[in-house]
Length: 261
Image (cartoon, rainbow, N blue to C red):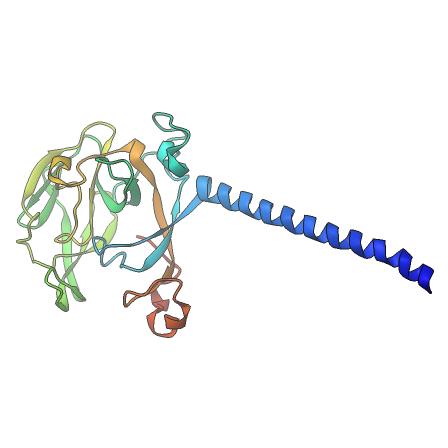
């Protein structure tokens, strides 16, 4: 009996040690896979401001595809390795919703819609968008309800805008066609740069505001991090995603698993 117990004890210890080692290996493998996915494939991103309402709302969490436009140093954590240019490059298309590093500090993440391509002439006249001297078509639709510049919630003018390549998306004009940036330009987009605008046209600091005035200005292709693809989570009422005890009231289920257009 005692001999049997002494034989079984070492086996139990060995099995326990093997289990711990295997668990550590699995954890390290999971972390490595997560790092590869985060660096080369998809990066989670949350919406901190209302500049892209109604397409994206504060509290939306999305996946941004890192591979859509190739890779620059801003595609990698901490900008390392610090190489110049872009590899496996594919240019953004007009109408894409993209995440990019703000050109004046190369650190802050912004998300806007690509409106102007290299060589384009962009202009705003009385709230209407002109691309290469052609007024972009828009169609009034049922008004969205959102917060205006003074914190009042109510219906705001809402439109479907159709870009020259056929991309359709919603915009809002919370100040009508007389907002601060509703008369701006003309802007001539330099080679290798893009002109970005928010869908919340009267509440978006974007390429209509030059960098030396605290705006975005033209965005170099190198600063583009990826394309917004999918809303995978969404919370409202100013709740944080980790406040799970508030989910019964704050989760916006209708916004989840919607592609970004």
